[in-house]
Length: 207
Image (cartoon, rainbow, N blue to C red):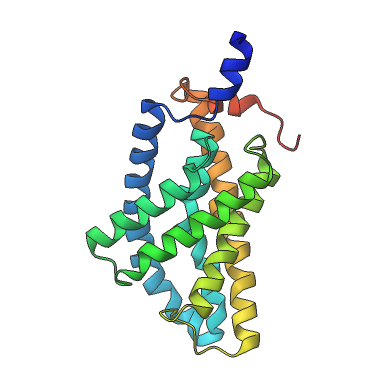
């Protein structure tokens, strides 16, 4: 078997450095989750007064680990791993949402993971990052609206649909767009030298 074939067959395998960095991203994500939850609780009150489904626009912050983790690690499972561990971290820090954050994290990570899988883990440009964030947001909206513990399960059908649209938009912009920018910024510093994302700063935006 040629060296090229061996390299191709192992390129998606996780290395120790991948696991360590993914774990660090997830732990950082847990802190972001916790802080975002505190801020969202304060901001959501006036939004609820205007139109409750608008709170879906705040959801994107909870999906950053999924998209950022995949954009950096670029290995199957990275989005799901980072998002789920981040949710676990938030729970340990005292989440106001209780143990339900674990399933929420899993579902949101799954949404992003599926999107990257559709592109066979080969596309990490801006459109794909935006779509991954939107997918995570879409799954978040479904979870919040239809799971037994969903906090807006009492919404009308129309309000649930609006909420899901808003979470998808938020996921695309906050989790997708900001994570893509963050990855390019980190690549410029050289800290991603051990990853395929090390050239993210010079990769085509749309190709």
